[in-house]
Length: 188
Image (cartoon, rainbow, N blue to C red; front, side, top):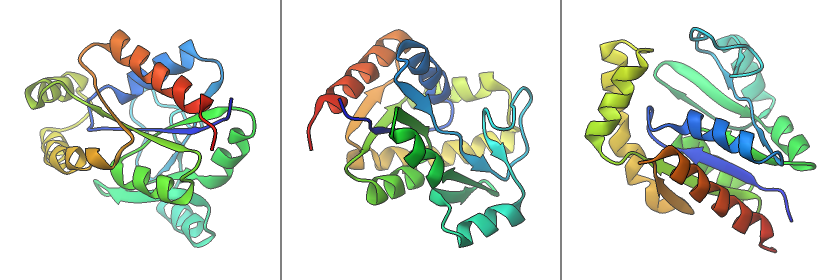
Protein backbone atom coordinates (compact mmCIF):
# COMPACT_ATOMS: atom_id res chain seq x y z
CA UNK A 1 0.00 0.00 0.00
CA UNK A 2 1.20 3.48 -0.79
CA UNK A 3 1.51 6.39 1.62
CA UNK A 4 -0.78 9.33 0.96
CA UNK A 5 -1.34 12.86 2.16
CA UNK A 6 -4.85 13.06 3.60
CA UNK A 7 -6.08 16.62 3.77
CA UNK A 8 -9.02 17.19 6.12
CA UNK A 9 -10.83 20.52 5.75
CA UNK A 10 -14.09 22.01 6.86
CA UNK A 11 -15.56 24.92 8.74
CA UNK A 12 -14.38 25.81 12.25
CA UNK A 13 -16.31 23.81 14.81
CA UNK A 14 -17.19 20.94 12.48
CA UNK A 15 -15.08 18.48 14.50
CA UNK A 16 -11.97 18.16 12.33
CA UNK A 17 -9.56 18.08 15.27
CA UNK A 18 -11.57 15.47 17.15
CA UNK A 19 -11.87 13.33 14.03
CA UNK A 20 -8.15 13.56 13.31
CA UNK A 21 -7.39 12.48 16.90
CA UNK A 22 -9.71 9.47 16.51
CA UNK A 23 -8.14 8.53 13.17
CA UNK A 24 -4.65 8.66 14.66
CA UNK A 25 -5.73 6.45 17.58
CA UNK A 26 -7.31 3.92 15.24
CA UNK A 27 -4.64 3.65 12.54
CA UNK A 28 -0.96 3.59 13.54
CA UNK A 29 0.15 4.04 9.92
CA UNK A 30 -1.05 7.66 10.09
CA UNK A 31 0.85 10.66 11.45
CA UNK A 32 -0.38 14.21 11.82
CA UNK A 33 1.41 17.07 10.17
CA UNK A 34 2.14 19.95 12.52
CA UNK A 35 1.58 23.34 10.92
CA UNK A 36 3.21 26.65 11.75
CA UNK A 37 1.16 29.66 12.85
CA UNK A 38 1.72 33.21 13.95
CA UNK A 39 -1.29 33.21 16.29
CA UNK A 40 -0.87 32.91 20.02
CA UNK A 41 -1.41 29.47 21.57
CA UNK A 42 -4.85 28.77 23.00
CA UNK A 43 -5.12 27.39 26.49
CA UNK A 44 -3.69 23.86 26.61
CA UNK A 45 -1.95 24.03 23.22
CA UNK A 46 1.71 23.02 23.06
CA UNK A 47 4.40 24.19 20.67
CA UNK A 48 5.45 21.40 18.32
CA UNK A 49 2.35 19.36 19.14
CA UNK A 50 -0.65 21.47 18.13
CA UNK A 51 1.30 23.98 16.04
CA UNK A 52 4.75 25.45 15.76
CA UNK A 53 4.09 28.94 17.13
CA UNK A 54 6.43 31.33 15.34
CA UNK A 55 6.74 35.08 14.81
CA UNK A 56 5.44 36.86 11.72
CA UNK A 57 9.06 37.71 10.86
CA UNK A 58 10.12 34.04 10.96
CA UNK A 59 7.03 33.02 8.97
CA UNK A 60 7.81 35.55 6.23
CA UNK A 61 11.43 34.37 6.11
CA UNK A 62 10.25 30.78 5.63
CA UNK A 63 7.90 31.89 2.83
CA UNK A 64 10.86 33.50 1.09
CA UNK A 65 12.81 30.23 1.49
CA UNK A 66 9.93 28.27 -0.12
CA UNK A 67 9.66 26.24 3.09
CA UNK A 68 5.87 25.76 3.01
CA UNK A 69 3.80 23.23 1.10
CA UNK A 70 0.96 25.69 1.56
CA UNK A 71 0.27 28.77 3.63
CA UNK A 72 -2.48 31.28 4.10
CA UNK A 73 -3.35 34.32 6.12
CA UNK A 74 -6.78 34.55 7.68
CA UNK A 75 -8.26 36.11 10.78
CA UNK A 76 -5.07 38.18 11.01
CA UNK A 77 -2.64 35.26 11.35
CA UNK A 78 -0.51 33.12 9.06
CA UNK A 79 -0.86 29.32 8.92
CA UNK A 80 1.40 27.04 6.92
CA UNK A 81 2.56 23.46 6.46
CA UNK A 82 6.31 22.82 6.48
CA UNK A 83 6.99 21.07 3.17
CA UNK A 84 10.04 19.19 4.50
CA UNK A 85 8.03 17.63 7.34
CA UNK A 86 5.38 16.23 4.97
CA UNK A 87 7.85 14.91 2.40
CA UNK A 88 10.01 13.26 5.08
CA UNK A 89 7.06 11.60 6.82
CA UNK A 90 5.51 10.34 3.56
CA UNK A 91 8.51 8.04 3.15
CA UNK A 92 7.27 5.88 6.04
CA UNK A 93 3.67 6.93 6.90
CA UNK A 94 0.54 8.44 5.49
CA UNK A 95 0.23 12.02 6.69
CA UNK A 96 -2.95 13.74 7.87
CA UNK A 97 -3.06 17.47 7.31
CA UNK A 98 -5.86 19.49 8.91
CA UNK A 99 -5.99 22.77 7.00
CA UNK A 100 -8.37 25.28 5.46
CA UNK A 101 -9.74 25.19 1.93
CA UNK A 102 -7.15 27.49 0.37
CA UNK A 103 -4.28 25.44 1.81
CA UNK A 104 -5.91 22.17 0.80
CA UNK A 105 -6.23 23.24 -2.81
CA UNK A 106 -2.60 24.43 -2.84
CA UNK A 107 -1.42 21.10 -1.41
CA UNK A 108 -3.39 19.20 -4.06
CA UNK A 109 -1.87 21.37 -6.79
CA UNK A 110 1.70 20.78 -5.57
CA UNK A 111 1.40 17.09 -4.62
CA UNK A 112 -1.53 15.86 -6.70
CA UNK A 113 -0.53 12.18 -6.90
CA UNK A 114 -0.21 11.75 -3.14
CA UNK A 115 -3.03 14.03 -1.97
CA UNK A 116 -6.60 13.08 -1.11
CA UNK A 117 -8.94 15.93 -0.14
CA UNK A 118 -11.71 15.23 2.38
CA UNK A 119 -14.21 17.98 3.27
CA UNK A 120 -15.98 17.50 6.61
CA UNK A 121 -19.29 19.34 6.79
CA UNK A 122 -21.77 19.94 9.61
CA UNK A 123 -25.23 18.38 9.54
CA UNK A 124 -26.65 21.94 9.49
CA UNK A 125 -25.53 25.55 9.91
CA UNK A 126 -27.52 25.75 13.16
CA UNK A 127 -25.58 22.80 14.58
CA UNK A 128 -22.31 24.44 13.58
CA UNK A 129 -23.26 27.64 15.43
CA UNK A 130 -24.00 25.60 18.57
CA UNK A 131 -20.64 23.79 18.32
CA UNK A 132 -18.70 27.03 17.89
CA UNK A 133 -20.42 28.65 20.86
CA UNK A 134 -19.78 25.56 23.00
CA UNK A 135 -16.04 25.72 22.29
CA UNK A 136 -15.83 29.01 24.13
CA UNK A 137 -12.39 29.71 22.64
CA UNK A 138 -13.34 32.77 20.62
CA UNK A 139 -15.02 36.12 21.15
CA UNK A 140 -18.44 36.79 19.65
CA UNK A 141 -16.74 38.84 16.92
CA UNK A 142 -14.28 36.03 16.05
CA UNK A 143 -17.10 33.48 16.00
CA UNK A 144 -19.16 35.71 13.67
CA UNK A 145 -16.16 36.03 11.32
CA UNK A 146 -15.76 32.25 11.27
CA UNK A 147 -19.45 31.78 10.46
CA UNK A 148 -19.15 34.23 7.53
CA UNK A 149 -16.29 32.12 6.17
CA UNK A 150 -18.36 28.90 6.33
CA UNK A 151 -20.31 29.70 3.17
CA UNK A 152 -17.15 30.17 1.13
CA UNK A 153 -15.62 26.96 2.50
CA UNK A 154 -18.71 24.87 1.76
CA UNK A 155 -18.89 26.29 -1.78
CA UNK A 156 -15.47 24.68 -2.39
CA UNK A 157 -16.73 21.17 -1.56
CA UNK A 158 -17.08 20.15 -5.25
CA UNK A 159 -13.30 20.56 -5.60
CA UNK A 160 -12.71 17.87 -2.97
CA UNK A 161 -12.33 14.15 -3.61
CA UNK A 162 -14.78 13.32 -0.80
CA UNK A 163 -17.39 15.17 1.28
CA UNK A 164 -18.33 13.62 4.62
CA UNK A 165 -21.10 14.92 6.92
CA UNK A 166 -20.09 14.82 10.59
CA UNK A 167 -23.43 13.95 12.16
CA UNK A 168 -21.98 11.16 14.33
CA UNK A 169 -18.30 11.02 15.30
CA UNK A 170 -17.89 7.23 15.20
CA UNK A 171 -19.72 6.84 11.90
CA UNK A 172 -17.79 9.73 10.37
CA UNK A 173 -14.46 8.35 11.64
CA UNK A 174 -15.24 4.94 10.15
CA UNK A 175 -16.23 6.48 6.81
CA UNK A 176 -12.97 8.43 6.62
CA UNK A 177 -10.92 5.36 7.61
CA UNK A 178 -12.53 3.43 4.75
CA UNK A 179 -11.74 6.26 2.33
CA UNK A 180 -8.10 6.22 3.50
CA UNK A 181 -7.82 2.42 3.10
CA UNK A 182 -9.32 2.55 -0.38
CA UNK A 183 -7.00 5.38 -1.46
CA UNK A 184 -3.89 3.69 -0.07
CA UNK A 185 -4.68 0.56 -2.08
CA UNK A 186 -4.95 2.44 -5.38
CA UNK A 187 -2.08 2.24 -7.79
CA UNK A 188 -1.05 5.30 -9.74
